[in-house]
Length: 184
Image (cartoon, rainbow, N blue to C red):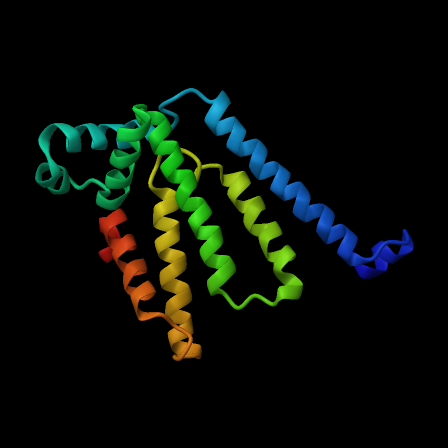
């Protein structure tokens, strides 16, 4: 790539910066698309709205027995009390956990600061193209748990002084309580 870019009088950093900002722009467009253009109850959002309705109508015990995503539903419940719009509460919760995932990756991974733009270029592009992390589903919450668990477990193996046992435990709890079939 250096050879190709040097033919046009540019270095690699210009291309990376341009791509980074383009992927950031793309994720912003996807966010606007999901929040303001798409109609409510997109995809699996309806099923999670029913989980919330069950929790509010029959209580916590019945909802857990039915197999809802407990922590995700509790976060949606709190937001719904503030926003009074189930679809919006679901989407805000999904977006919030996507943002927490990005923040966790930034602060807890050992990405070389020189390559941070390249790394986040791909992360933003992945989030933007999947789009599902902004929908009202528990996917972003599950991915947060997986990323925390895998990163902390790899730190435990490679540098036991750097891992955080509490974060490892939280990651495992998020995974199990969000997708119960993960235990299998």
